[in-house]
Image 1 (tube, rainbow, N blue to C red):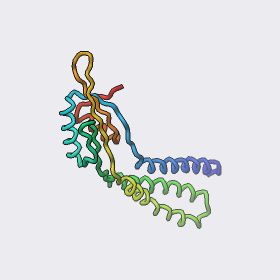
Image 2: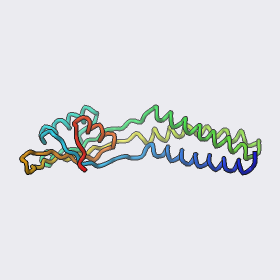
Image 3: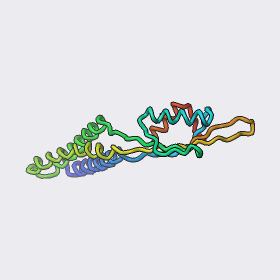
Image 4: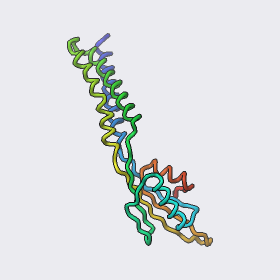
Length: 178
């Protein structure tokens, strides 16, 4: 192979390795979002139902302001074994590709040393496992607004992980306020 093909292949493989690094790092990124939602239930009913819902999902009430209709729950997010194994596998494939390209560029005596870099791959799973296990908070504030038509609308301001927000919207048929 010509040197230009090897260098361009190395460059593309190196860029792939950088992308893989950032993908592994993003697997533990905090994805907390804030949304304002509107509910069809009354304020008191929704307050009780939301408390029961989060207790069933293994969240513990941390702070409750009955007068201000504010609730805060905390739960522990367990890491996914599948994702830890998958990230380790991706890291192994990425390192193996990088080693293959480097073994074509470097003298043959470095091949064994380079191949031993694959032993770093389980570090991706360990990084995910340690960083993904964390406490997570859900904060809610429930308000009622009397519209001109005489019907009360219940508004919920939620600060939570985006997956928890999606599950909450499905469970209570909440609509997002634009």
